[in-house]
Length: 179
Image (tube, rainbow, N blue to C red; front, side):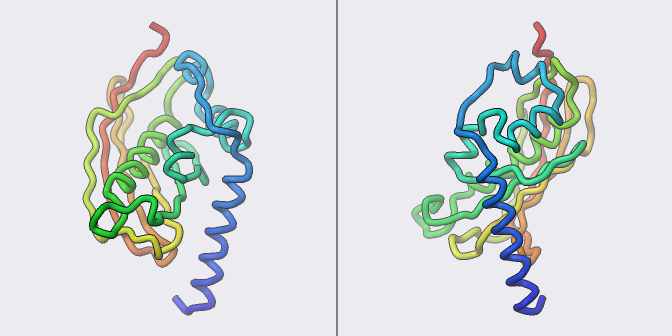
């Protein structure tokens, strides 16, 4: 991609992340009963607009929800030296967290009120090291299967140049939260 196109795309990504961050409320949580009573679209829209608190862990790790639709979810974060391991690259847990979040939220978009989920299996394959100088990355999750008791999703982390950093898949257990 020519430098001017790359710079324009990078600026768009940075602006999108800043706009999403500016809309978020302070970190906080809801009870499982409160979350499971909401339609998924309503839940994510209210988080994204600041009507509900932003999840504390996303705030801690510093990534934001960018977009979502039925069976699809995208987070954006910018890894930096706060996320480094002793070897001088971003800790693998950062990528695993982004993938677990985008894939789990993709599953959540298809749940019914009264349902919840929990990760039972997370698989991550690292393609290249994340570093603090690459700029923002996006974690994109897509649902593969939604059954009555389990769901499967896959995800990927990529940068503005569409370089792949990690891929993952997950199995989640679907829970009845009304019990």
